[in-house]
Length: 157
Length: 169
Image (tube, rainbow over all chains, first blue to last red; front, top):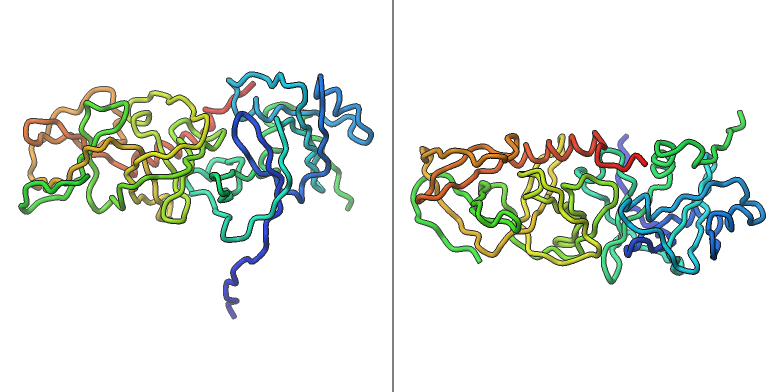
């Protein structure tokens, strides 16, 4: 018997982050911690209790290699953690988390989504579209960019 | 914006030009054209091929906006720094087994033409992407390039799967 397709009525809880002048969404389910940093962001994050040893990636430089490193007095470190991996990214700013109703969530077209696109969908916001970071695909990209950028977690058998 | 061409039996084409290639007349078949519309909130998607300008909103849905001049002549456009609105030609294509919709910015000079089935061929302008073009036609003393949208989609797909646009730093 074929089950009918019921519409997904779940809201999507996300963290808006700003980098290189654009706002992106990180699924809140994957956000383990948010730290406001100052000075050398990487050292600050590594020195935090419980976060030592997690490499920090400048997400703005990854998304836009020609962009200049942020020279603001403070940036934010977002620790992304799932049962499979952990990594941390630097962003320029963080906005309060929000929820998007299903009607505000849109899949990317096949032309964009093919080839391992790092974004799972876009959200329709009042002031524009917000790409949603696929944290698993971002982990795969970080592994490709540099070994050790992602802290892997062993699965218990 | 659209004006009717001479009416006689033949193939319906939409002739237009694009920013960056203003001197080149381009065309697609009318069956491929969905609309000429303003695309709002064109948003760049990082780490996608340079030929993809980004995602935009159209009729309540999300479509892909491509850099047609860049695809045809191999130039790389400057990356958008912020979402913008622009007037685009919206066309339908097939990607794999799925129907998809793409768009690209155009100039406000589009015109519908009825082209005879035996229209005179012209020499293809040099340096155009071969797989993106069906033929060049001589229409009223002007060369008009008939685009191969499926070839253009295939070109972008190869770019995406090759991932040669990503920074290996």
